Structure formats: structure tokens, C-alpha cells
Length: 304
Image (cartoon, rainbow, N blue to C red):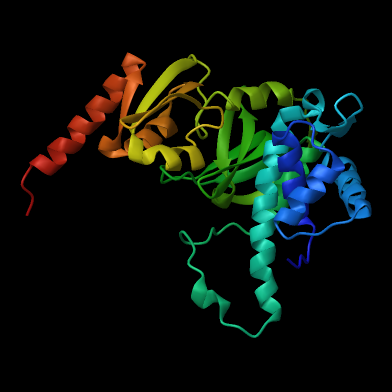
């Protein structure tokens, strides 16, 4: 398999080292060969150094087990998982971009999920730069649900992708809030610096599905029982990164999540319709029951 970029090698190298039990260099080279990707010892060491120095992936060698591992203690904020996600995006982009150099009608064979975002790349870059430099930003914001725009000055903390849109998680009036980049106008980085405990903020966002984080809500033990036909999809497209399987048989596929119930969680559950049931907590079960009752009324009424 001819590779024009190192992204696929990076992806598999990190994935295998994270998943396997102390694979040796020879083990990893053999795994590459099974995928018809042929590398030398020199390429392996070069890729490993690039991952450590350029991408902050802490790949270490264990002399006792004679193999490689990801140093979890130094893997801040689950960087490995995010790196694998980034590599998947880069691999796809690289594959598509290869067609630009060929005189082919490649767009005939591609169908995108929805309308492209109206966000220009400079907005992303400007927000990311201000975030890295810990500079407050000012902008005019038009939310998805309100008709009037509003001026904001916030502390940008980190960028988060959700449902094919990018958001900046920022501190505003001592609360965390998500702003869609494509809804921002007249963006300006100020000279005002700020300090933030990013570890604390990111931890708060591991406790929710999506973007809505309410400090007044507590973490709940959520159990969702799916029809067995949904198992592979729920595993492939998880509702939450840390969901756990608690039942898997011919009749059901049940998972547990430890999260704060919020709007996005309810959205995710509702999209499965009769193929999922909320088992716990009772409050969330009741909320979903009321939503289905409202929907039933809409369809029950005769409308011309």
C-alpha cells in the first residue's frame, strides 16, 4: 500500500501501542505488514520520535516487558484519544485532497452530510490563537435560538467539536458557556490576559453529553436499554466516550453513563425512538415519557 503521508502510520502506531500489551517494535512492524504497510526500523524510530516531540504522545519503552506503552500518567486530558480522532480526520482529508491533482470528477462520488459551515478558517485560527495565548476575546454573537445578537467578552478555554460544528468553551460571568464559531462576528482578541484551570474545566465537560453544563445539576447513573439491533451502532457512535456495557444478549443491549442529564442527552435518546428505553434515573425517564406524550398528541390530532 503506497502512503503519501505519515498519518496512517501515526494512527495505527498509537492505536496499537494503546490497545496491545507492550508490543515490541517487531510486533508493530508485523502488524503494519498485515495491512500491507511496509516500514523499516528507521521509519519506526522516526515516527515514534515525531509522535513524542511534535504531538505530545508519551510513547515509552518498558525494559521489563520488552515493549512499548502509552504513559497514562503523562497523557493529559486523554490526548491519545483526541489524537486518534484528529488522525482519522487528517487521513480522510488527505485521501480527498489527493484527487485535486488528478483530472477526475471526484465530487460526483462524494456526498456530504449537510450544508457546509459558514465559518471562515480565520475565525477558527484567531480563536485558537487567543485561547493558546490566554487572551480574552470580544465578539458579536447570534445564537441559534434567539433573534437578537449580543456582545460578549469572554475567556476562551478550549475548542470542542459537536455534531459537525466547532464551539469555543469560554468563561463568561463566572460560568462556562459554549459559543458556536460560525455564529460569531466582529471577533477581536483583546490585550487582557487571564488564568484558568484547564484541567478542572475539561473534567467538568467529561461529565456531560454535548455542550450544556449546568453547575447546579448532579452527576447521575444513567442506564439505557437498546434493542439488540442497535448494539453495533451504539458501540461505533457512542453517546458518551465513557459509556459502559452492562448487558449484551439477544434481547437487549444496555449501557450505563455517569453524566449530568441535559438537553443533548435527551436529544440523543429521543432520536432512537422506540428502540431505546431509559431505565434510570426515574426523573430522566419521566421527562422522556412526557416528551413522547407531547409527540403523540401532535400525531394523534387530525391535521389537514
